[in-house]
Image (cartoon, rainbow, N blue to C red):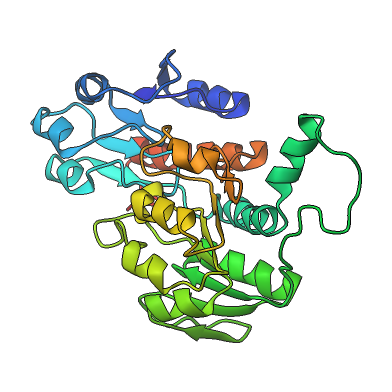
Length: 315
């Protein structure tokens, strides 16, 4: 079967793909354009897209009878794919859950620590040659141990963040989720605004969909206490970026740590200018072992389709 891989994957994954399929690898490193997506549905049996390859309703509307019958998404999030549009044309969609959990949770804790302890500011100071030595009140940050950690979205990743926070730093856990969770540590399920108000650190780990779009809006940010720090490791459009900028500029919250942005790769100049904001370039799953696991999971989904077997990870 003809398989299109939209962007280069780790070498080991590419070798396994080429051994099993007739592989075409796009040379361009950027996301697929709408025209490329439409053409790909006509020319390939299986697509292996990545974050940002927008397989939208318009793309499927332009492809009423596609050759493609399988989209093996490289990633757990699939808000860039119109799943209903795919299903209407008999196209199965899969993702790669599980493989990303620990790596993404690690980034969540990294952002908490970097933002609380002003690590980004300190690193910039040293690199700029502006550090004049230790001083008692230089770059004073905030303690993390024992603080209150609120998780928005208590799925695999949210629970992994909470596990690290509770067992690693003795943090008190609260969460906002559609259903109560049976957890091995004390944790309170709270309404969103109550969670925002009572937490020292709020980590966004919910899936991206129509319900969660801009769930962290001006009202939610207004509910936070002025010492609160917002961390986003989910998808950028869960947070109203304009409202976040306003909250940060006007001291409504103490800081933010962001690995994702509403209009990636564009990062607002206002966020870049703020010293109390930690900015990462979507590093959530950027570990070689993790990306290899993700690639193999995507290939396992594709191979199951090719063999006529049940798909391991349908969405």
